Length: 254
Length: 206
Image (tube, rainbow over all chains, first blue to last red; front, side):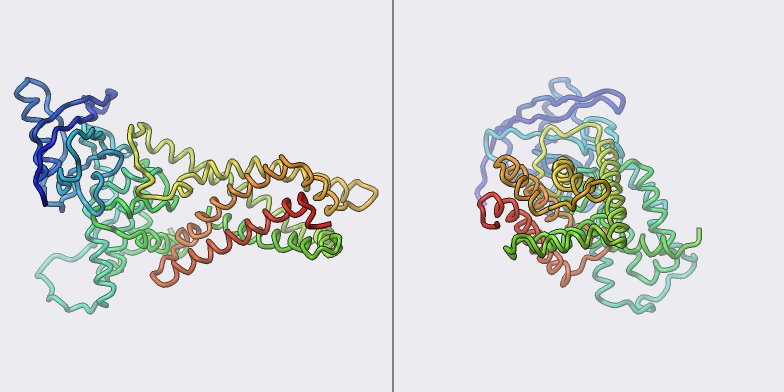
């Protein structure tokens, strides 16, 4: 791939804290390499801001190799930018041309309040996990691997659901700010395995109840979440969660 | 939404099927017979109440979704490219539904109110076939019906397959079949309905 440098105009959401209103501020960066990642371009911009004595832009990032789910940025109208199955840290500047104007906004949802600039509080996801996204096991020695037989298909589907990194792109991109793709992936990964069976019913009921409490919107099956998910989590998980929820609701006594 | 929607989808099959009898071109005889049967059968009168209850419930559910979903994103994005990740009509069910409600109000004023007055207070039986002739002789009414049907087309195209996803049916083999059936249903129902005003307006049916 041919290497080139570019000059860019950036319009970035600046917001002091969750109490104040934010605005889009315009910045210019020069000689950005097409081989840089989007976050490296942000590093360059922040270096500039520090030199001129300005407040650098706050943004979440951690692994920078596409697996931690921290780099939440809504870039030019798309969660994690123009590439599909991709996180912001794995978005490279070759996705843009010299002279482009790029608009960067935080995830926007009532359940994800902005902490500062592009950093949002995704604690709502943690609380949903605490409501049931786990299996209770006795402590002690590790059990032998492969002692519980599991159908290969179930193992694969469970693994695919488990590849959810909890980034929140599904919520950010959904026209309703619905968290159904995230919650359904977390429900599915355990519902498909024998280890998840004992708490299967209470899990789905509690996690959905917590999801509703956090103020996410409702799913209207636009499937935008699947299209924007960096891990390609399928909406068939949402259908599975609907089945789980329906049957749990009918069969539990409480 | 899915349950009420599927009930309304079933109703449309009956509605389109009965009305399609006008295409027999027998001066509306068959159609009148069925219309008479339908307005004098107590089971169907009972189902009619269920139909209105379902319709109202569908609207209430829609309004609740709309208000909850609006609250879930208090600050809007400055830039969104939603067309790159979802179909416009899947995101516009509320607007399409509102158009359908406006259409329904007009539609009921044309065909429902008169029928009921005749049924419970009139001295002579109501001729729905003649009424269709009169209503569909005006070009702008025919045009309004086309607009209503276009809204119905997009509403059904999303709604049909969406209902099955809500009920938890998403399968590698069956979902493409459901989507194809939904598209087929939508096209057939909307075409049948669209042909009715057009047929009267252009005099294909006498």
